[in-house]
Image (cartoon, rainbow, N blue to C red; front, side, top):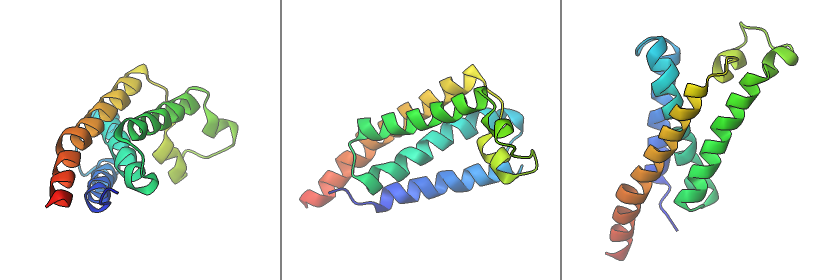
Length: 131
């Protein structure tokens, strides 16, 4: 079994960066639209991995599918369809503007999360468990 601590820590750090970006403390629209999209998939990945004890590839797939699903919901303007006001925090969190570039950023986030886990965390965690 994997130790959940490093995974939850990385997820929490990503969340804090996401909040800082959303509140305007870090960067502008470009940062929010690119780095924010990358970080959200990384955050979801590192939250899923220990909670469900999935493999790195499964966690990456779930995180990526989640990002793509949110983008699809933006494409069909789901928040407008269900009557969520622009002032609602859900509108800020999920967004309502589809962008194909976001799909690329989500994919990049999935590759980054998988790579960090597979090539940095897993070998170190196995090394600690073996000792």
